[in-house]
Every structure is written in C-alpha cells, then in structure tokens.
Length: 476
Ligand code: NAP
Ligand code: MG
Image 1 (cartoon, protein in one colour):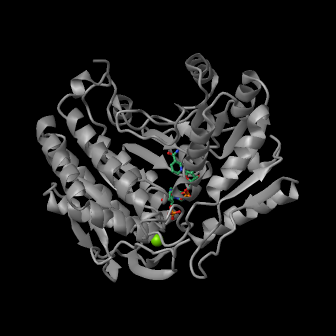
Image 2 (cartoon, rainbow, N blue to C red; image 1 turned 60 degrees about the vertical axis):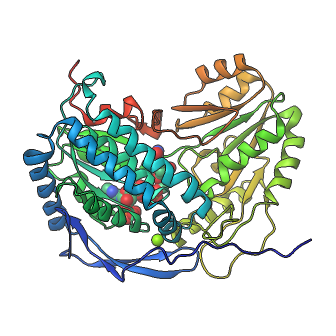
Image 3 (tube, rainbow, N blue to C red; image 1 turned 45 degrees about the vertical axis):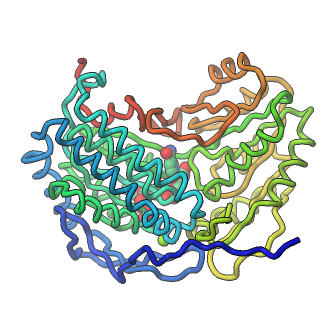
C-alpha cells in the first residue's frame, strides 16, 4: 500500500469579495434590505456577506428588466442576441476553472464534477440556445417572447440551473430577474460579472440574492410575465397557487424519486457504476437521482455485494481535491433532513449499511449509505431524501418492476439496465418518467428535453421543447 497524496486544486484563481450587492440594471448596487452569509459547507468557513433583496429591490430589478425588454432586447434581431449568447458561452469556457473552483467552494461538490460536468454543460447550454436565437421561426412555438421572466433556482447545481433558465429566456428575447439559492449565491454573482464583461445591455439579466421571501416577491410581482422555478415540490405547489388566475406562464421543475432498474441480464459491473453514479453523484443532491434501486431478485445478492465493494472505494472529503468522489452536504439544514429521514428508515425496519470512513470534523458530511429490506410503503422509498442514501427493493418480473417504479407521486426519471434492446423500449414506454436512461444514468445534454410528470412538475427545459416556456406559442 502507498500513502494517499492529496491533490487539491488551488483556490488562488478565485477572488471572493467580503461582501456582494445585487446585480440590477447592469451594475452591482447595495440592496435596501439586510444581508446574509454564505459558507463553505466543507469547512463552515464564512465566505462572504451577501445582500438580501427586499420587495423594493425586486421591484427595481423587474423595472430594469422591463425597460431592457421594451427598449433593447425585444427589438434586437435574433442574430444580434445570439452574438451576446455566444460571447457569454465563450467567456464561461475561458473562465471555466474559476467558475468550477468557486462552485465547489460555495456548494461542496467535488471539483472533478464542477470542472468536468457542471461548467462544460453550462457553456454547452449557452452555445446551444445561441444557435436557436435567429431560428425561432422553426421552433414550432412562434417567435414572440413573453417579456420579463422571474426565475428561482435551488442550490444543488447553482450555475447549471442558472444556465438552464437564462440561456433559453434570452435566446427567445425575454429579459430576466433570477434568484439563486441562499446557500449558493456566488457563481450567479460571478455570472453577473461575465454579463458585464460580455457587454450585455443593462437590465437584460438581473441577479437578486436572498431567501424564500425574495423568491416569493419575484414570482408574485405583477409585472413578471413568466415564472420558472426549480426546487422542492412543496414550494412549487405554493408558487402554482400564487400565480393561479394570473396571465403568467409557469414552468416547474420539482422533486423526484427515480427507480434505477437492474435486470438479471445486465452487465453487472457497468450497472454497479450506474447505481453509484445515480445516487452518489453530487452527494445525491440531484432531483433525478436514482434513489430507489430495483434489482431483479435472482441477481440481488451479487449486485449488492459488488455495490458495497465499489462503495468502499469511494473517496470522500475535500471538494477541491481532484481525487474526491463524494463532497460535502450543502448545508447543516440539509444534513439534518438526511439524518432524520434515514432514522425513519431504521425505525421502519430497513437495514442500514454505510461506508466506513473517517469524516472530517468540520463541515457537513454524510457517508454513502444503502438501505436494504425496504418495502414500498416505507417513507425512505416514497420521499425524496436528496442525499447519498439509496433504498434497495427487489422484483421478479418486468411488470412488477414497472409497477413498483411507477408507484410514486413523482415522475422525473428512471434507469433501465438490461442486455435486451426490446426490453429497453418496452420499459421506456411503460415508465411514467420524463427521462428514461438505458444502461447509463445522469446524462445531460442541452439538445435533450428534461422535465417531469405528476408531482415532478411541468414544462421542459433543454432542446427545442425548452423554447416553449419562453415564447407566446402561436402556431408557426
Ligand atoms: P426549495 O426550498 O424549494 O428552494 C428552491 C428555491 O426557491 C430557492 O432559491 C429558495 O430560496 C426559493 N424559495 C423558497 N421558498 C420560496 C417561496 N415561497 N417562493 C419562491 N421561492 C422560494 O428547494 P431546495 O431545498 O433549495 O432544493 C431541493 C429541492 O429541489 C429538492 O426537492 C429537489 O428535488 C428539487 N430540485 C428539482 C430539480 C428539477 O429539475 N426538477 C432540480 C434541482 C432540485 P432559499 O435559497 O432561500 O431556500
Ligand atoms: Mg455556500
């Protein structure tokens, strides 16, 4: 054996300021409200003091967005708008390392994920929608923008969710007011600087930081024409109620409880990699995480044995270490939620197994965990844990797998592992999920629409379908 040599990425590339204002009308301004702190969840170090936007600040941001919409952005040709989006995409690539390091510091996710997954897909999203800006007449949803979009995003993929929201909105000619999550505001504020660097006309993008109240002020603002939200089903329902009866167009991307289904003819080692990727990628803070493993009874013992062996090799710790597979839980609050629901699993009689490893003494950590002996009625099989916790159930026939997979209020994603192409197709047809991956998991591409059924929300993001939520929708 050899000693483990850490390989931390330098944080010298990022310049975190002691305090941040709001980005309104192309400038950073002091808010009229209070402020809050954002911390590094791996160390609990306070990173910066960030302005909490008041209702008056949100109103200023919406006014700036409206002015920019009427006077500049909606009058500009699609080809001109595209130039700005391409420029933003290129700057994101150029400043990719800075964005990745900052994302890992503020969010806790491993640098190899922020560097190799989040940031490249963010750039790809801007490139992709830049390509649509002058081709909207082929979209099938008309060419007329809605106006001002109010956008509220969660903390699990701060920059990626920002890209999913802002790129299609701008490509279609809308302007935006976006609120990042309270625990992860820093990359959105760096994105604001990138907008300045790209000479984006003032007011086209406004970033207002804050907590739930700021989000509420955005979605209920009377001069917002479109509400785009990603987050919990609970808040999504509250937003749907708040905008009901208004003219606002709404898209909601909410929670999930995906089944990852492994048949006995699947290549087991690949399936094990897919199970690990499905639930331990991004500490399981993934709306489409494969948090329910459905494994065919005849191979269950073998799959579980190999899964435990593989989990024992996962390296947990410093998010900036290039070898780290599993980083920190994003907040103390989220850690508490994961612990509580896991304890419910114990009380319900499921059997807990977790990776034996030394956890850092500072910060928020939860070891990769699986529960076996889980039945469909258990809360750990029904509720979203949003952490590195997998519930394992078994099945005998494909129909039983479909029935169990669909036995959930959610319907965001699913995975199917089998050697048979015909089975993949028949399963995909029967699974009530927005995305079905076959012999892979957690694959994201800007050309591919993403979104849910049932309580996972409505509307699609990504691909041509992603334009629908930002256009008036007259038949072309
Ligand atoms: P959350 O509490 O719903 O928060 C999401 C965002 O909404 C945050 O910016 C939050 O501000 C804000 N917010 C809170 N209350 C609000 C209100 N009444 N009106 C308007 N905005 C409000 O969710 P979370 O705990 O941050 O994120 C985890 C959840 O998001 C999970 O359930 C997960 O499944 C879901 N999610 C879904 C997708 C998807 O694509 N379907 C993607 C990622 C995450 P604060 O920052 O202050 O809380
Ligand atoms: Mg933070």
